[in-house]
Amino acid sequence: MKIIYPGTFDPFSLGHTNITARACAMYECVIIAVSENIYKKPMFTLEQRVEMAKLAVADIRNTEVIGFKGLLVDLMQEKGVHCVLRGIRGMVDFEYELQMAQANRSMLKGYEPIFLMPGENYMALSSAFIRDLLRHGGNVSPFLPKPVNEYIKQFYDRI
Ligand code: ADP
Image (tube, rainbow, N blue to C red; front, side):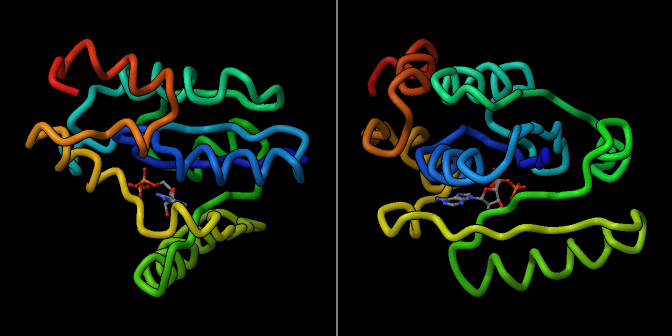
């Protein structure tokens, strides 16, 4: 069975890699769907975020990375996938995810959210924290997959 892992991935972190790897052990294919999400005003363009996700999971065989604009449920129908993977780091994530899942379920029959908990090293890690470090010249390398860190160095020569 295939599962879609949607997100902004701005940028793709070690927390995202951790969730992807866990799901890859359980599903035939994990489709990482990078959302345009213009309302969040991402730091990186959709193309850059797709590129970083591809670099991050290049070594994981059963992954596919795509960019998408529009509704997740439309993408799911297009791909014929009913399971959606999301990471849960705590109660805040959980409340938000329940609301999103309920809304999506009302639009797509059979919508099945699957929640995974990351390894303890990644529980407090967020892309927002990484973006904050980048803005202020902090060291982001402990939080990013190596190739993503290399990619980002092009834009931020202080890291
Ligand atoms: P979104 O804008 O959709 O919340 P994110 O890129 O922030 O996109 O996150 C995508 C998914 O990855 C979400 O399910 C989020 O909870 C999960 N996630 C983010 N950071 C981590 C982490 N450190 N560990 C596990 N899951 C995470």
